[in-house]
Image (cartoon, rainbow, N blue to C red):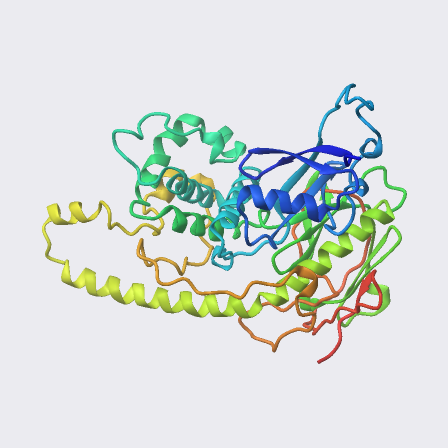
Length: 463
């Protein structure tokens, strides 16, 4: 007897679509493997499959059956015994980034890194960091270089790109499409000589400096009697943050890096966050709206923290490598400037072609945005400014899977933010689900450990 199949439409970060067929008893792992095979992803542990519930992306537990995440129609026969009848609409899932990393060099697989880049591009288009307008123009320049290569005077004229594909709508509304089309090409030219791969890496680094890009948002209820959620929980690169909505605008209340959380627990619909070193009366209490959603949040928070711990050593190695590259590039720049001090203008113009400093911030960026734009340049200097010729890529050990990552924290390093396997802290708010709470507490570093005996809480321990 032929196994009953279901049609699943998987939407990719590149806006491509995959139409797949899986058995009615299939697990998320089987669907995920099909997606990885078709997209060529070999390093898939940063990605996950999600479904939309109440305008919120819920990532699947890949070991669970797909019937858990799709509607009741999943188990119903859509065709008669002779294969006739209405086939019905396909079930929809999304391939997206489940675990963010700020450095794209941690993703060695080209296909995975390319999808990661496209996911961040979509996030940037929805970003609303109004005080960082300058960053969006730099990101657009990196994106154009990654997608189109070097700016070509004859080919890239007029409207050679769509502003809405590289800029958030609020910038287009503020500046106008004509302004963007007039000034973005100059910033694109500044990236000449940068390879598409390096442009993607620098886009990833700059995008992760925007507060609302590398983060998952979940709406929570502050009180059970609330008609709608007014609290936003953000799962960030370093921990969790809590926001309170005031006049539909989220305002940051608490920022907890992973080491600053004593305990995180879900009791049914109740969500509790205990700041380190504070009495129980100072805990933050919110509500998720349903126990099923609480389990989803707990699993995502736990596995995100475990991956954060598992990549700490690799982050430190990359940081040291990039600091050495930066120092070397500055030395080379100093020697070059000294030697070229008396060069003819014609020679300088010739060198400005393929060997121009591809990653330096355009000197005219602030002036073209105008004095009233409140641009901020507080983002740290990109350590990969060595130009088009990039050093050998560091080999990073691949995590063996989120569940198998070490749950004990490696030795403390002041250069990295430590997280607790079972504790939450600091995130940035945006949009999502349901939960509530209240409380305030000062934060002090701790060495958290995940208590695997209780599937619904974390409690840090002292090393």
